[in-house]
Image: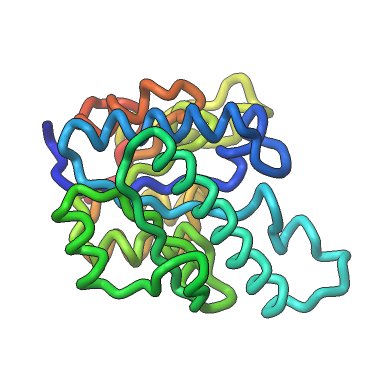
Length: 236
C-alpha cells in the first residue's frame, strides 16, 4: 500500500445514471459507495470532495438569468445534497461517515473544521467535504486540492469517465494520445482541462501528486488507492 490518506474527487455526474446524466441514480450511488467502502476497509483514510454538476452547474445554466455569485451558491448547495446522499448510502452499508460543509447547514452536516476532520480520519471514518470552498468563483476541483493540502493527503485521485489525461478529447478524436505521466507545468501549459488551472497550481506549489483515472470501472478506485500505475499521474 502506497497511500495512507487519499483525497477522492468525484464529479456530481458520477452519481447519475451512466455517469453523465442529471439527478442521483440509486443503483449508481450504491455502486460508488461500495467501491469507497472497499478501499476504506483496507485501512486507507478517505476524504471525498463531491461536485454538484448533476443538479446545478453555472456553465450549463448561463441563460437562466441568475448571476454568477448566486448560481455558484446554488452549486455549492447541490454538493451538499450529493454528499448527504453518499453518506446515507455508505452508512446503510455499515461504514462510519461524516459530512463536513464549508457552508453552515447544521441540520444536515457538521461545519468543516480541519482538526475535527483529521480526528475523524484518525478514527477511520470516511469524511465527505461539501459546499466547495464556501466561496463563489471556485470549482470543486479547487476545493479538493485545498482540502487535500489542509488535511495532509498523500494524493488527489481524480475520478473521470475517461482512462486518464489526453492531449485532446478522446470522445471526439480517435487519435487522441493518453499520457501515463505528465508534469504540472506541462498540464498548465497545454491547458489540459481535466482539472482547473487553479487546482493544478495549488498542487504544483506543494508538490501534491494527482492521479486521474477512469471511474466507470469501480475496481479502478481500489487500484489507484493501492498505488497501482493506472491512468495518468501528474507530478513534478
